[in-house]
Structure formats: structure tokens, C-alpha cells
Length: 178
Image 1 (tube, helix red, strand yellow):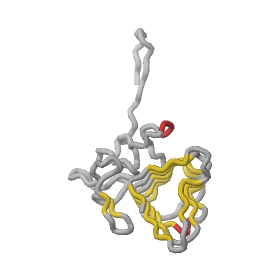
Image 2 (image 1 turned 180 degrees about the vertical axis):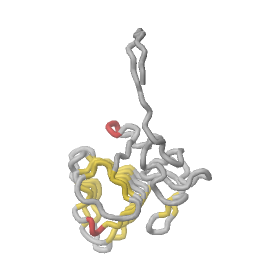
Image 3 (image 1 turned 135 degrees about the vertical axis):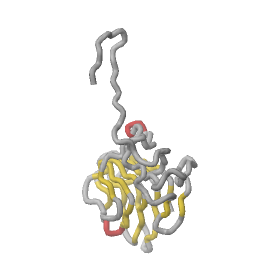
Image 4 (image 1 turned 30 degrees about the vertical axis):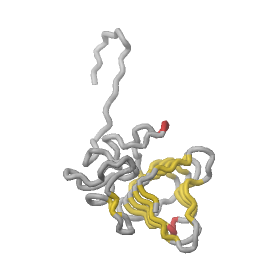
């Protein structure tokens, strides 16, 4: 089982995970998995594997064979190729705080907020994941759905838009009209 983890294959690696073994049965839950834009996220050679409440970002391809994967409540950000079908699959920008510099926390406007299951996350193995990678509770009295990936945001739902940041040169008296 892999849960509440961040996996980076942002260098010259050709894959982030190799799921090997004739029986399969690996559970991957609430993980943030980031590639270099051209590599493959998963090489799966046999068995069935479950992916639940994860974020995959910047991969040339998800897997060599999607038939080995059972995927639900997962977001694909800049992942080329065919994605497996499943419950609540998102193919949109994760909007990390700072993807380029490895800050995979979710800003208040990320679509990954509230993208998971009811209350705390229960993955396909019926194991409850009560906290995120930093120990913050996934189940809060005011929240109804957990967030995708390794980091939980305090919001129950994402804000509609990202904040507008306007810079003006020091000493400028020009009035900005928005």
C-alpha cells in the first residue's frame, strides 16, 4: 500500500512506479505523483492495482497498459494519452501552489479540493485514511469530501477563481482600473 505520499520522477527517470508481480493488489491512495512531462507514470506488468484519490501531473503517458488499473476519484494534470475510466475522474489543471518548485500543496482554488470521497477517504481496500501527509485531518466537521492527493486544504470547496495579482512600479501615480 502507498498512501499519503509524494512521488517525483522529474529527472531522467522513464517511470515513477513499476508495479510488478503476478498477483497485483497494490493500493495507491491520496498520493501526488509528478513526472517530467515526457516520462510514464506507471509500468504495470501483471495483476490488478487500485488508484484512489490521487493526482498525477506532467506525464507523457499514465501507463503502458491501463487494463491493470482500477482508478477512481483521481485528477490528471497534463497527462497525455488515454486515461482509465472510473468514478469522478478529472482531466484538468491541479493548480498546485508552485509545481515548478515542488510545492504540491493545494491552493484555495484547486479543483482537487473536495474531489475525493465522502468524509474521510476510504480506499478500495476499505481502509480509512484519516489524515494527510502532514497529519492534517481529512475529515472535518464542516467538510463533506476529502481532497485529492497527498495534501489536504482547509477549504470544503475550491474558490471559483484564482486571486488577481497586480504589480505597479514603485512611485507610480497611475490609477489601475480593473
